[in-house]
Length: 345
Image 1 (cartoon, rainbow, N blue to C red):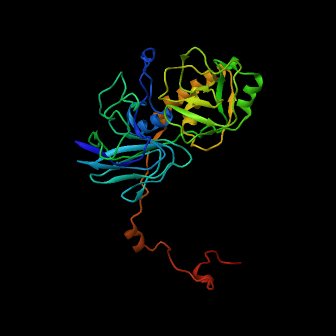
Image 2: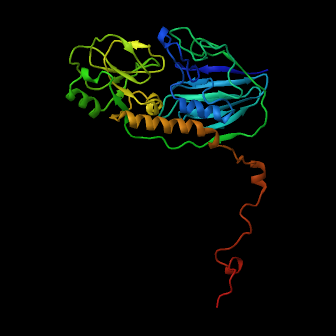
Image 3: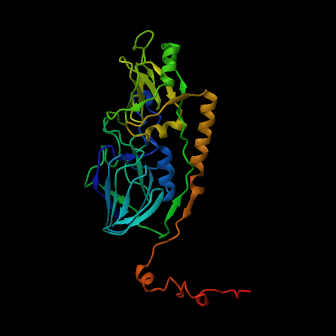
């Protein structure tokens, strides 16, 4: 059987799928991909289910080698340099590694996470219905931790050799949209306006559990302690120091800081892809607007298979090109007889 071997990989890289659900009441976090659209796009390129497990690759580089036979993979998400045996390959395409070939990925550019899907999916034993890794809890499969050099993932035999690409719509580039609350009444109107009117940056100390935001301090009316209640992906807690934290995929299932706002589902992946140090703003929307955007996002996920097309092979045979007379018949600029095709009056 073919295998994909991790030759090298940076931190913040692990196996992730759509997440594990149904057990948050027991304190089990959902985990799952930080950017589900990119995960689904990568899976669509190799014919997997939209939220099947793939390799979530953090901002740093990585390399993967096919062993025991060819392996078909696809890459989506953050733009980054990529090549197979020095042949450049593009994001949002599928590609086949021949036995012994290595796919090398450089640093992410303008985003944080890429997704490498393997044709046929990733083999592993589901934990509470998911392969997603939560390193703090020791959950996930086939490796319940971040990936390391030397890790091996099984792959199915490659079928046809037709590669594919996917055309995604241009992402929304406005502010990150939020629904205010559920504890926005713990903040004055001035503090809520400060939250929405300020420029924020994600701290370099952030991780899959939470994104710490750098910006002005947001002060509470009654202090920072509340009775712990449930959280969701995108909950924005405000700590005792006044620093907001956006809860991400490996968040706890409950928390005791007031939540000033919640990132809407349609913008969660866009926030997750925002690199540390990049400035952005929030904008408040109504619940009805958030639900409408969720419907659009769901329709987009469902349409991904229809956005896949075959790649037209444009590789050049340089030996043939060099031997061809690509200039055609030679002419002389000073001799009209060699190039004038219409007889002058």
